[in-house]
Image (cartoon, rainbow, N blue to C red; front, top):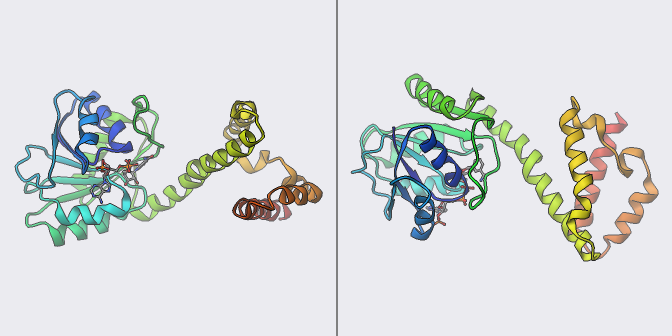
Length: 266
Ligand SMILES: NC(=O)c1ccc[n+]([C@@H]2O[C@H](COP(=O)([O-])OP(=O)(O)OC[C@H]3O[C@@H](n4cnc5c(N)ncnc54)[C@H](OP(=O)(O)O)[C@@H]3O)[C@@H](O)[C@H]2O)c1
């Protein structure tokens, strides 16, 4: 299939080569800053950059919208697609209906819409990821589009779900706790230990074992340890004392501690 990308960030960096490896042809890549599109194109077979959102003359059938969630509507307002093109967004949290409604209002020609959400964390300039073990959630504006997206997703991934928007949004919420918040906490941990003059690697065995145990358990709650879990209130107080001059961290510590205590009280 002929495919175009709108956006050349983290998501596009990994999804575009994966689609090429599955035998598709990436035609063009649009980004506001052309250098970003050029960077992505340099990793593709013979895609070219596109500097405007007028893609009316494109030969592509599928247009992948890989811009931040909050930019989707603004991009749709300026996007000009060929008649009967298929436009998918890649977001975990934007409802398909907002893309449908947007294109109905902004596009002069009929456009099909869908969702192609890959449940993974993607960062550009990292080695390209295989999608084989990444769950992909699709949703189509109608049964034909949905079938096409399932087929496309199955060419990339062993795990494909057809998921309506409300379920996908809840799945994304779960993913934010699992990945984004965990990574943020690791960043805090990094700053606290390096302030002490020790390297972050000192924590690697602890982090590795924590994740290993959580994945091996039927529920990570079963293998929780630490002062809040044990009820060591003296230790909790002493940690809060150490965070006296960092009220934002103290707040995070107290919120997490009180939630751990709530879970194990019941
Ligand atoms: N990253 C992940 O881990 C991940 C995982 C699953 C799903 N997703 C979804 O994938 C989508 C893209 O996320 P991302 O992480 O790839 O974002 P990103 O790295 O921030 O990339 C954004 C791309 O969109 C362009 N852009 C930003 N604001 C724009 C605007 N107002 N108008 C036009 N273009 C704009 C940027 O242009 P410039 O290049 O010119 O700056 C860039 O090319 C989101 O819907 C996100 O929810 C991301």
